Image (cartoon, helix red, strand yellow):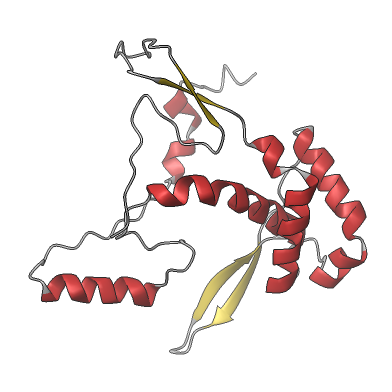
Amino acid sequence: MTEVRTSSLCERPCADIEETGEAPSDAGGMECSRRRKVHSLIDKVYDPANLAEAWKRVRENKGSAGIDGLTVAGFEQRQDELLERLHKQLREKTYRPSPVKRVAIPKLGGGTRNLGIPSVRDRVVQQALVQKMNPIFEPLFADCSFGYRPGRSPHMAMRKVWREIQEGNFWILDADLRLEAASYCPRAYGVTSNSMG
């Protein structure tokens, strides 16, 4: 059985965690038995070796061009230049992802399904993030969690549901989180047209 690790208010998961002997209060006034020092990961994300490995995986996955029209083959022709530009933009915090290209693909039963295709450079950055974040956060997920996890599929989730039903467990929770458009309403954050200038 896989061990499930949980995070508390006193602990944030990170690849580089140093133990300290301090026991300061957090904002809520609770005492922590140990304080953990968490280091930034962004420098590890934009490390040239990590970006090169991310590019290698994107290239292996192939895929279509995004909204900018740059194909995997086109990126490969300029990979040194483009990887150096990504490194610089991430380091200087000037990187901005491109809009996602929307493509309608036909469904077997009729109709279409919208598919979002990020640009190749955005896929490289996403892969670079995954490579550094997966080792930190993957061990924290419960064994019964299947969505967007490496080595897991919807078929595995359905087998798990079937096993649970056979064992007499009839309550199954399927939850999706969605950010509603109302969350972006400026008035929800105390911003009015007068304060916008």
